Length: 324
Image 1 (tube, rainbow, N blue to C red):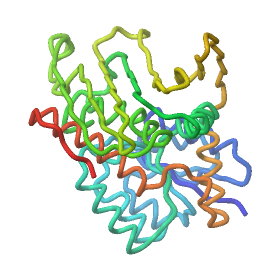
Image 2 (cartoon, one colour):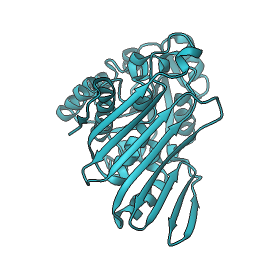
Image 3 (tube, rainbow, N blue to C red):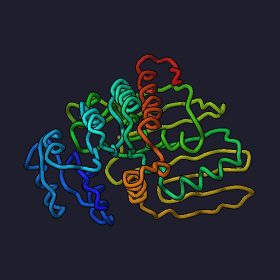
Image 4 (tube, rainbow, N blue to C red):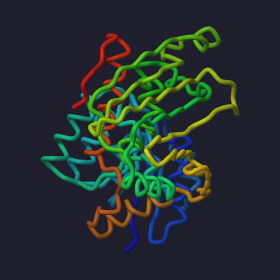
């Protein structure tokens, strides 16, 4: 059975997912959809037989699609998921789910009434190092976790607008929030401090904060802190999440997992491509109905969105905010 897949969005992530789909056995990219026919056709030209559209409904009316990938900016979700749910079409949507929590909560209610297979692009969950970290932590008591997402300001205009991206913690550092939840459990309360220090002086129209730190209280009683910035120059940065337990330190980053205990440090490299595993799990679910391999469905991702949105609220009010 050949699955016919459509891709909505024409940016870099559409190409990442599209190129993986193009190499997958029994899959054909049948259609692409963009904000203009020029963009849609440009992406479609990468994949043999794909057609370009500038409206989602036109694409869905013209092609009998088995699944759709939504690779769109946070502010551009209006009506997309609703249309797919109404037609019973499985979808994989890139994170974050939006710039706030209201929209995702409404979509979640629609999914409860009319279930379809969903997957959300929290790809760190598909890293072998993340699975190893999760298993190791099961036998240890977490005292504290510290995470960082330090980098430069992305060049796309919508990212620099609060109403476009939701800010760095919602759009980018959400990956660390999700990984924290995945390996260490739910977050009950957050307290955040954000500021505009540098980037708004370098570029016009920047309304997102460029530094921030968030303290998170987990249901287990453990405390975590996640800090981020986008003030660094290009090609300089660090991303990682470390756990401090009664047995030692487990330091994770996208390329390796380092374990420090009893005066010994052991590192495990991580070169696997999580996007390939993510797509394989989603396509298997579409083919068979078995969604057990999907590690972040829409309902789970809403819980990550709730944490990041609570952090934004805390940064505005100056008060700690309960998540659940």
